Image 1 (cartoon, rainbow over the protein chains, first blue to last red):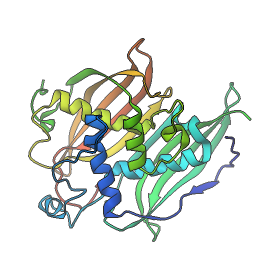
Image 2 (image 1 turned 180 degrees about the vertical axis):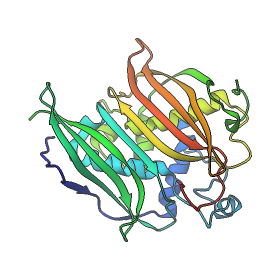
Image 3 (image 1 turned 90 degrees about the vertical axis):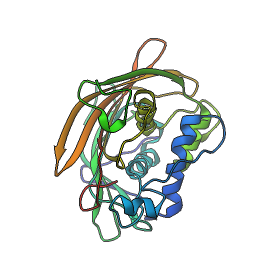
Image 4 (image 1 turned 45 degrees about the vertical axis):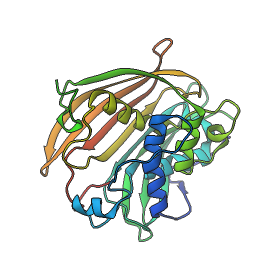
Length: 150
Length: 147
C-alpha cells in the first residue's frame, strides 16, 4: 500500500457513536485475551460497562476505555498505510476528556512533517486526535508512520 | 518494593516480570474485532500479526503477575498510551514482557503512575515494542482527564 500526503493533509474517519456495546466489547476483550482459551470471558463491573459502578466512582455514567479511541486512530492509520504501521513507528495518545455513551467520535490524523529515509521510506509525522461532532477534542497525540517506498 | 500487593501500591523502582507467553490467533482476532480493526493482516488466516496496541493488555498481564490482590480501593483509569514499534509481533511468536515503574506523582489530588513495558521476542530478546503507560491509580470524578 502506498500513499502520498502533504504537510497539512488530513485523514478523517467516518463518525461513530460510542455505544454501550462498543464499550462492552473492549471490557470483555480484556479477560478474554487474558484467558486465551477460545471462549468469551467477562469481568466484574467497571466504569466502562456498569452505570451504578461508574456513579459510585463520581462519574455521571459509563465512559469509554481510552484504548478504544487509541485503536480507532490506529485503525485510521491502518486504513491508509496498511500493515507497515504495525512494523515500525510510534503512536502516543492522551485522554483529555471522557467519552460518554452515544457520544459521536471522529478520528483524525493531520500531517505535520514528511521526510525521506535512507531506506526510501517516507516518514510521516502526524498530530492525531479524536473529536466529537462539535469539534471538541477528546483524545490527542502524535504518530510516526513509515510509508514504504513505491 | 510494592509488588505482590495491590496495583495502587506500585511505586518507583518496582519491576514486574519477565512474563512469557505465546501470541495466539484467537487473542489477535478477538482484540481486533473488539476494536473494529477488520484488516486482513490482523484477522486473516495466513500469517496474521498483532495490532501494536495490544501491548496495552501486557500491562494488565504484568499487574496480574505482580499485584495479585487487584486494583485497590478506587477505579484505575488509563491516561496516556505511548508505544514505539520496532518490529511486527507475529501470531505464534513466543514473547517476553517486563515492566518497571519509573515515576509516581500527585497532580490535582490524583496519583499518577508511569510504567515502561518492553515486549521482546523470547528467543533472542529482540525488542519489538517499547511501551510507556500512564495511569491514574485513584480516580474520582469526571471533571478533567478521563478515559
